[in-house]
Amino acid sequence: MASGNVMAFPHSSSLVPNAVLKLGRFSLPLDRALIMGVLNVTPDSFSDGGRFFDPARALEQANRMIAEGADILDIGGESSRPGAAPVGAEEELRRVMPVLEKLAYLQVPVSVDTGKPEVMRAVIAAGAAMINDIFALRTPGALEAAAGSDAAVCLMHMRGEPRTMQQDLHYQDVVAEVGAFLDGRAKAVMAAGIGRDRIVLDPGFGFGKTPQHNLELIRALQRLRGLGYPVLAGLSRKSLFGRIAGRAAGERVHASAAGALLAVQRGASIVRVHDVAATRDALLVLRAIDDVTFTFEQ
Ligand code: HH2
Image 1 (cartoon, rainbow, N blue to C red):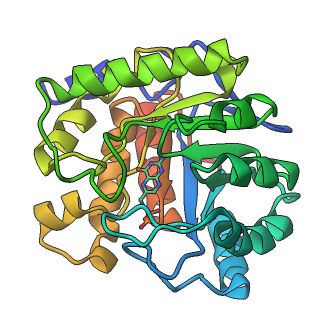
Image 2 (tube, rainbow, N blue to C red):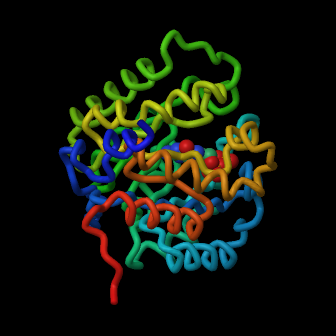
């Protein structure tokens, strides 16, 4: 029964005990899906490298994403694509700080995509409300850096590191292994003093996974959500859509909006996207259809 999916994956936070996400001075209700807009201040990110490297261009893009409906902005100063050149903490801060300083006190919480404890401490001091760590706070000192603040944390699954992650793609059961890893990291983070309402989990689409693994993880989002934390899906423009639709990274807007929509329908609470306007429209359609009390304003 096709409509069974909608019933099985209600567009509500009923399965998330913490119906609010706390990020620094912000509290975001999780009764609708949140859009995290990606702001890469890098020369080499996989889909938009160089476009927003200049702080003025980055600020323009940030304001555009806010106007288009972003609930959170995620600033990244180091690309995580396979083979990207590693960046030191000093250079990462040189890229991120000028933009963060301009955005940190706006009405939208700002996340910083980093795995380095020294970067975490500096950006939190400068007003970052969330740490998005593709290493799930496993770098020595990272857990302490985040725990000593009131920032939210996004804990992502990745085997190995970006340089090597596509070398060993074997899992017995990708969903069970990713779920066990995320559950373990969430427990470690809570033991360090970070409250449940500050934690977001992310299966890490494309990080050491085949296209088939990525599909299995999308299908299993509700199981991951059943761990008891909001789940973030970072599918935007990824090569999965290149494989499915046969398109280059810059031409995956439509596939990505469809992916975000289906991820939310299957249990994601936050979608991390480059194309905020397209995602917003897709999610508005989903809400209007899912919410049986929806009425049009006269
Ligand atoms: N994906 C990328 C970067 N950071 N963080 C989370 N939590 N989840 C993701 O799926 C994720 C992430 C890769 O995308 P992008 O930032 O556009 O590219 P790059 O790493 O090349 O800058």
